[in-house]
Image (cartoon, rainbow, N blue to C red; front, side, top):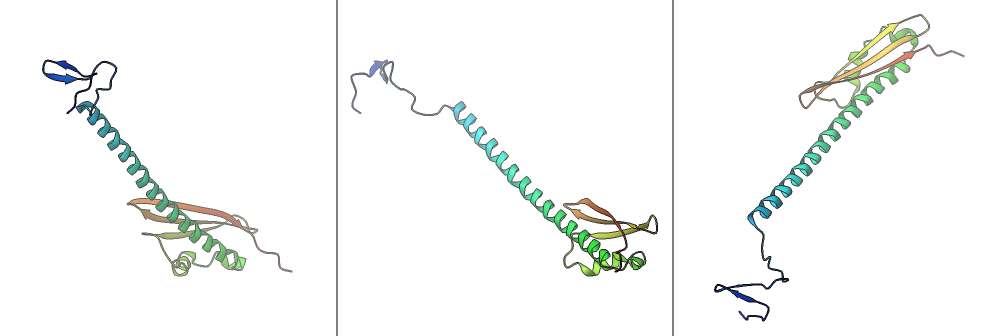
Length: 147
């Protein structure tokens, strides 16, 4: 190794003269801090990605439940008013839907408040990631005026 004029001898060892960079590597503390920072950043990124997938799955299942409730409400809307209360909508919804959610049940409650309209509530219950989920849609149905 060629010695430069700026290098100064110090007890048989060579050190860099003041003003020159003498930092050639990482200390143990810098390595540990850098590694810990990288691990924390990777963990936070992994947690964010996992949460995103879980929320996407829940949103997809909720959209499916809303679609099933709307299918039942649309069928109720297309049924003559005097036949709505007598029909078994829970059985109809089980047969009519093409796909279902895990442990899905659709219940329909028809409550005649007055003779002018019916209160209809469609409830969809299912299980997502071991947790029970519930969605309910309520509306009032009135008879269609006949021309």
